[in-house]
Length: 120
Image 1: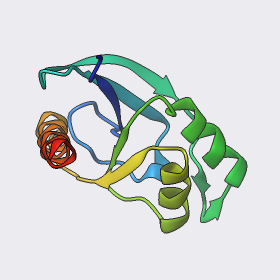
Image 2 (image 1 turned 180 degrees about the horizontal axis):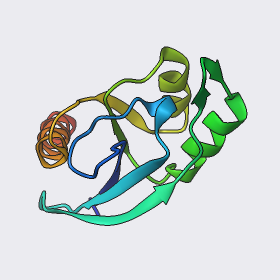
Image 3 (image 1 turned 45 degrees about the vertical axis):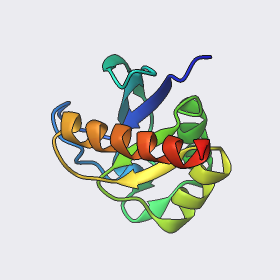
């Protein structure tokens, strides 16, 4: 059984989770293996959803489709509409601005605790 999953990270510099979902022009994709180890896989470029206060729902859907294979979405901020749409696609958005490695480790710990509860 493969317990691996992917995490999409909104970061402008590849170091910190520092992008609002709607302003992100790329997502860094990390793969987490069943043993809790993780590694960077790739960058997926997207078009920002927000532009000068306007939101493009078509781009919102496109961007979420590009990361649909990810279980989690790490962002500095995400609006309620985008958050709900992500959840409908099976992506759990998490507002966790921090160093990417620290944020990823926190998500891994959360996932491990969730798995403990599901087994009991």
